[in-house]
Image (tube, rainbow, N blue to C red; front, top):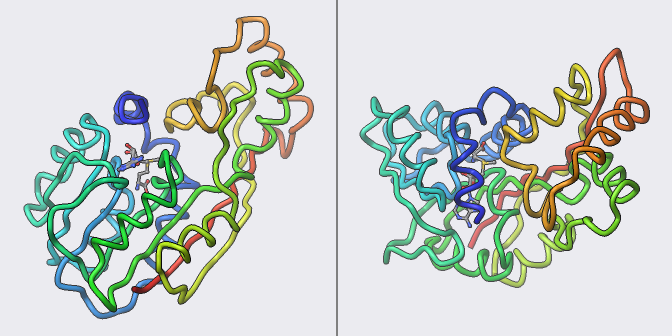
Length: 254
Ligand SMILES: C[S@@+](CC[C@H](N)C(=O)[O-])C[C@H]1O[C@@H](n2cnc3c(N)ncnc32)[C@H](O)[C@@H]1O
């Protein structure tokens, strides 16, 4: 399900992805200077983190694994000039190709995992002893203004599942066996031209479905109009509206 939602967003995602880009930059800023022999990237999507990895480690082979087939097809095309990237369809929760990598990187992807603990345990298997796992995650405070309004407007349609909290992620990483070297936890307000532009932007990022906002049932036309009007009034800022993004970046070892 997640695969098809992100596949649909593949063509539009990059135009509206500033919070994800900031997170990918935080993930890369934590990496050691020495180039690894190879990299496994989980959930590359349209390749924002991939691009930064290529800049940092130009000739290092990258195995890039995404659960959405269309994302892989899209990125294989846009990165055709980089034969060192091996694009593969696979789920981070179960992916295993019999190899252990010195560096595994992932940004703005694994918070979607159906089972976070199982996913981290699986990632741990693919990391070589002493290897580095550099991870960026979107957290529960992301789009909290939208969630608050949705609860007020249509409480019966509130999504049952939410993004993980900072402490849930730390707990799951530790119980998978990772050792924490560095971490960075941030809350940022992003400005949009108006409420409609905001809703369009998050839709195009592929984050409006499932866990983040529209999980069980779509809003009616009336509910959606009220959402736009109320958002514009309650979360106005600097001539537009704001939305909060809560993120965390972790540098871990095995
Ligand atoms: C918001 S995009 C992020 C892309 C990119 N890493 C970035 O930094 O902008 C999330 C991507 O993660 C992928 N994804 C989500 N869950 C995944 C999983 N369990 N295994 C592999 N890929 C996954 C989605 O298909 C999507 O392409």
